[in-house]
Amino acid sequence: MSVAVHGEVHGGGVADHIHPEPQTFVRKYIFSIDHKIIGIQYIITSFVFMGLGGLLAELIRVQLMHHSGALVNPDTYNELYSIHGSTMVWLVIIPLLTGGFGNFVFPLQIGARDVAFPWLNMVSFWIFPPAGLMLYSSFLMGAPVAGWTEYPPMSLQGAAGTSMWAAAIFLIGVSSTMTGINFLVTLLKMRAPGMTFTRMPLFCWAQFATAPLLMIATTALGAALAALFIERQFGVPFFDPTKGGSPVLWQHMFWFYSHPAVYIMILPAFGMISEILPTFARKPIFGYKMIAFSSVAIALLGFMVWAHHMFTSGLAPWLQLPFMILTFFIAIPTGIKIFSWLTTLWGGKIQFSTAMLFAVGFIATFTFGGITGVFLAAVPFDLHAHGTYFIVAHLHYVLVGGSLMAILGGVHFWYPKMSGRMMNETLGKWTFWLFFIGFNGTFIPMHWLGLLGMPRRVATYDPQFQTWNIVATAFSFVMTAALLLFFINALYSLRNGRKAGPNPWNARTLEWQIPSPPPYYNFKHVPAVFAAPYDFAEPLPYRGLEGELDPSVPAPVPAGH
Image (cartoon, rainbow, N blue to C red; front, side, top):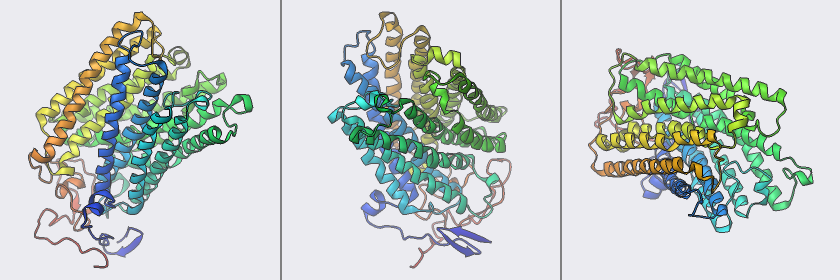
């Protein structure tokens, strides 16, 4: 058998790791080319930005506790929600799911010793923190005020910080594109012997479906951002209607990226849930192939529905109808996943660990957000609700009740593998219940406020909406307390948590068959795979793992040494 590794082909086996383990702190933990360290770097950096974005969110909620909005003036309020939305999309959710968990987990799950292009992986990460700092430095020169979508002509008239915003998001797009290329090549060329597509863990399928979105959709956003920057700095009239440009062109380019970006932010989360549920239900995942292929279907359909965000832009009625129908269709592969997950739970010997609680909570909240998405796919309903708080509620049910709920479950699930320590389960369960109650108490009232007519992106509002805004703000403090408890638990457990051992969950995918945390080279001997990993009634479907957990077996010598 010939196996391609890092661009070389070796008959009968897999090449040694292509670079020796670094010895200095800087090369080992700062400018690392180890996919596991890079994944942890992404996770830590994204959580730091989540703290900043969460602070902006609480300032927004405090502003809205009173109808007169006494905390900040309207211009500052516009800056707060614009940077908050940009932070959570581009600095938190996407890098956590792709750069973070994608880097750490999926190379281990396919039996690889690293990603295809380790140096490119390092560069991809180190573009990310400076871009985030650029985004927040826009406050020094007048931050963007047109929301995370930055629609022209408002974004053309904004302060100088809007150009900084465009440059920062462009750089993040470059990082995401490089990550997508790296992941796709790794998955196509570096799977362990016998790791066919129908034997891959479902998290790998999710990353496989996400990688082309990172590569293709991000280029549309990059072109739009470059055009906005050039127009603002050099006066080239791409989007200014007074000079022959078209503000609707921005919407087409932006949403051609940003609707697939919704799936960049949710497909890896689907993969996480598909790993957690069978592990703690102790039964095979139901409908493995349907879950896997539905991820690809979602990725393809994601490119065909962008204009449902533009029903209020003057889109011709004959164009509205096909986009509405295609949006209804995209609910089908998502529904396949949800029913498969529920069937996996049915009759299982369920262990309600913290990770499992977050996974079950994800199913509830994401399904609710998906149902309101079906409402908004209907043109008449969207025309009524588009500019209201109903949209804010729907978006947060998908990205917080969906993506972030899965991320929190994923941290509790893979934390032992990353650190070698267990997170405290009691604190974890308190985190879940506070988060679940706080989240629903914050965003359920926003559906009602939107249907009653409260507009989004306003610093002041009609007094009739004040009571429910007070309720939403109070519950947002509960959700914030949950996240603070989560960070305390993670930091405390890093030193004081119970030692995990290699496989505390008795899981079956490859990352759990090696020590925790994994060695630099991942596998002493790259295993052979002969079945899918989810049948708990069968022996482990791997050969060649002998000695992985035995410290007396020497590690492989790096190539050239």
